[in-house]
Image (cartoon, rainbow, N blue to C red; front, side):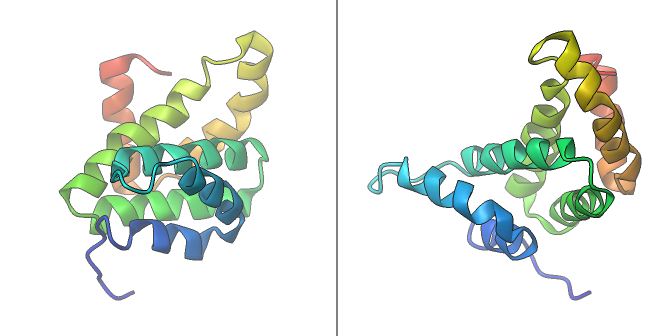
Length: 138
């Protein structure tokens, strides 16, 4: 794989290439934003995290593998802003999803979320463990 620096200008394009199903949600996200105001990349990453949570809950190994791979790619090749957004906002939003919606939602999401965690590649798993230690998300 060729190394490319991932930054604000190409991050979402790379994500959309890997996850075409995200396009509709992305278009709605863009339509909801005032065009004269720059969107913070954190909001874009948070939108993708919402999509990722829904995708993880589908419990399809292939999709979970792809999410783990794109996470690693963003952590490895992202500039400092992209890397920070993925290791904090993206992973934290996925982790906090477990506590939303009451006990039955947690039980339903636990198995797929655990599969996602187990499929994280070295850097993603490292940041997941660090977040777990700091926030107490198990």
